[in-house]
Length: 150
Image (cartoon, rainbow, N blue to C red; front, side, top):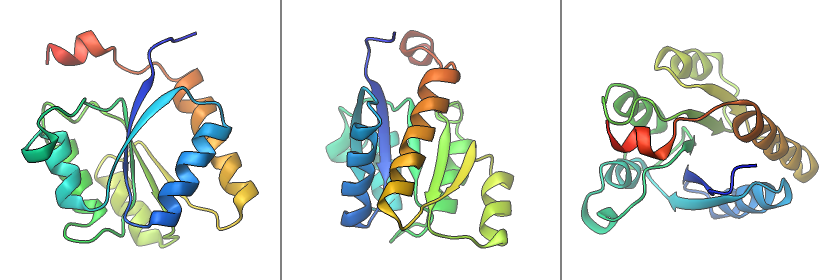
């Protein structure tokens, strides 16, 4: 078992969804440290370690909402996936949008997966467990040491 916590960056502007995501991951028994930002500009400042995020730890996984203020999720995703220092970080689009255009655009921008947020609490917990089962049990994420050398 991995004793290092998984560093997760949650990019979400809705306080209710932030709380629900935190509770869901806790319920799913994911050993993690969640950092949260509430808009696209903050997300990029965090990832580039600028301003108040100068000491931010690079995340192992990004949970990204598409409908964000200041800079939308697709713009954030595009910048992450075209940046040599960030593109290896898996990005899970976690959004309410069911629009085929958003799904296609997200994958075209190299999202690692696209998950539609359920409105039902029990289903949301199942999504959290699915994220845990797949991203933290099945998938091998890059090690901290290897990422630090890039």
